[in-house]
Length: 393
Ligand code: FEO
Image (tube, rainbow, N blue to C red; front, side, top):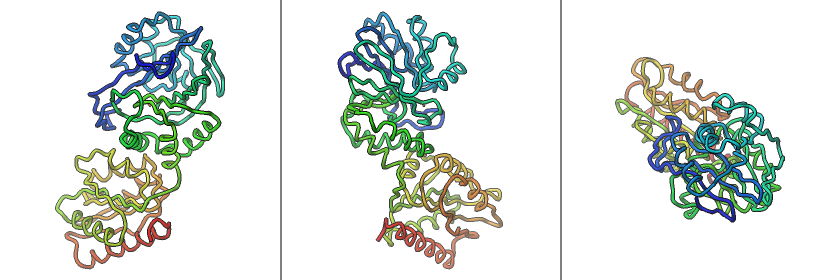
């Protein structure tokens, strides 16, 4: 149990060894399930629980620190990594009430073996006094489920934000020390988890504007003693600003697509267009997601397999579509042996993107000189498009 400020403690757990979240999201640096204990002069509250796999660690932190009574468990989010341990907490502290909003209560009743009588339902702006500390609840939907909320401690000016502003890192640092490292981890987290909800995030950031925030304590990663680091980053990431950057995500079977990608990359570089080439075979898609946050253009490149796109490209298209990046332009290039519906299939998979789809380039067999001319024209088009956005001179 480590003090953040007087009578506010971090009591959560580091999960150094976890390498995958939701059996989907890579965790190169593990993660943490943060929980916080707030001791008021009259009442004591626990902010969130932890993943069920680590619940005994949380309980031993509380019991080991001599916490004899809990009045409230504030539940910000019904996802299991923060709520899954609540039942075990209530076994040790049976008098504690679960404090949350109506939507989260409904989801917790779906996911946990708890009774309705154990809840105290709160609404936007409502406060709960712990004596000398006042908790103010801020409903912040879609960061990243519909029921998510935050708690602001007025006297200490701390915002407990749950997943909002988080970063997947297991670290011994209670507070952010290396801002660059945390920025990158938080950008990956935003890209993988928050990016589809840009407009909801904008509304939630506006809701936080009237608050004087001295610290942000998220549910994953270290506490921000300088909230502007992460709040300014979020404002940038959700803005319409894109960078002079083309992402080319590709897979190649017999080298045709690789030749096309390498030609396009070289041509774009010669024209001053920023470009990143991602081989989809064995990739950590988190790297791709990070660049999707601000890339102006996304290109998918693949050979044809059984008439459609290579499954790795279809998977990438599905992920890109689900993450809803703000790219302004998208393109498809690739190859086929005797026939292909790859362009139609991939275009259909990208239906969430509000991007202009550029003229595709498809090659039969090995690329020939006139195919490279088409790729040259595509590179010229991308350059002109980026110039049109004033992100390239
Ligand atoms: Fe960290 Fe959405 O759970």
